[in-house]
Image (cartoon, rainbow, N blue to C red):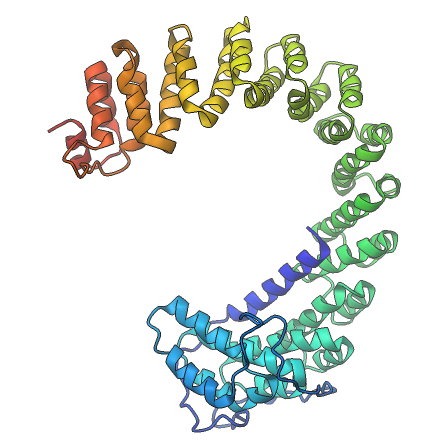
Length: 545
C-alpha cells in the first residue's frame, strides 16, 4: 500500500471511530433563525470547551465552489434563499438514498460566507446519515475560509457524536491549511480521548509531508503505540524519504513487539522498492529473529529483479526450512519475470528437495506461458506429486489459452493416468470457458470411461452457468448413453432455482434436465433429487408429480 493510501485509510478509520458512537435520536427544537451559531447553555447540557489556541486566519471569500464539491463544477452556487427553498423540497424526496444525495449536493453549493446563515437547517433532518453528511459538508465549506469560526460552531453542538465528528471534520481542513496552528490547538485540549483523536487527525495530514515532526508530536502526546495505524503510516512515509533514519528511529523508540515488527516490515518493503541492496544490507545486520526472517523473505524477492545472485545469497543466509524455501520461491517468480532463462538455469541446478519444488511451483506460470512444450517436457521428468501437478496444471492452462486443441492432445498423451486426468481437466476447462461449442465437439472425441464422464458433468455445469438453454440443447443431441452426466451437471445448477414454466407453457429448463436424467439413469436421478437440499414442492416438480 502506498503511503498516501495508508494515510487515507487511517483518516477514515479515525472518522469511523468517531461516528461509531451511539447517537441520541431525540431531536432538538429548530430555531426560528440560523443566522448565527447556536451557543448551548448549561441547562441544555453544553460542556466547557477550550478556546482556539490560535484561530486560523480568515481567508478572502469568493463565490467559487470548493474543488472537492460533489456536483458538476458548472453548477452555480446557491444563495441562502435558494438553498432554503431547495433544502425543503429535497426533504420531501421519498427515496432515502436519492434524498441524501440531493441534500449533499445542495450543501456543497453553498459558498463559505453563507454557511453561518443556513447551517442550522441541518437540525430539521432526522436520519443520522443525512444530519452528519450535511453538517460535515457545510462545515468543510465554512472551514475552507474561516476554520476558527467553523470550529467554534462545531464545539458548541449538543449531541456528543455530532460534536465529535464535526470537530474532526473541521480539524482535518484546518490541518491541511495550517498544520502547526491546528496541532497547537489540539495539544491544548485537556487529556482524554477527544485530545487524542484531535492530535491524531492533525498528524495524519502532517505525516505525508513531515513524518519526523509527526512522529515527534505523536511521542509528545504519548500515542506512539497507538493501534489505529497512524504510527505505521508515519514510518512508511518516512521510509519513502529516508529509510535508514526511519529504521533507526523505529528500532530506538518503538517497544519490541508486533507493532515494531509491522513497522519494520513496512520500512523494509518501502526501502526495497527504491534500493533493495541497501535494504538487504540493513536487514543482514538485524538480530536473527522472526521479524528479520520475514523482512528478508520479502526483500529477497525485490532484490531478485536487479541482482538475483545477491538475492539468492541473502535467502541462503536463512536457516534451511520453510522460510528459506519461501524466500527462494519469491526469488524464482520475480527473476522469471525479467529473465526466464536465467531463472530456469538456476532452478534446474538446485538439488532435489523442498527448495527446488517451491521454486518450480513459483515460476511454473511464467515458464508455461513462454514455452509450454518445454515446461511440459520437464514436468514429465519429475516424480509424481504436488510439484509435477502444479507444473502440469500451469502448462494445461497456458497452452489451452493459446491452442486448446494442441493442449488437449498433449494432455491425452500423458502416460500416467492421474497426470493425464489433471492436465486434460485443466485444458478442457479453459477451452470450455472460451468456446463451449468447440469444446463440446472435442469432448465427443475423447475415449469413453470415467474420465470423460467426469469431464462431461463438469462441462455441463459450467456451460449451464453461462448459457443454460444452449447447454440443454447440447445435452439433448448427445447419444442416449452419454446423456446422463450432462443432465446431471445441468440439474445441479438449475435445480437451485424455482422451476417456473416458460411463458409458452413448456417445462422449465430444470424440469427438462430432470426428465432427461430420469430417462437416461432413473435410479441415479431419483436418488440425487431425493437427497438434494431442495424444497418438497421443487422435488415434486422435478419428479413430474
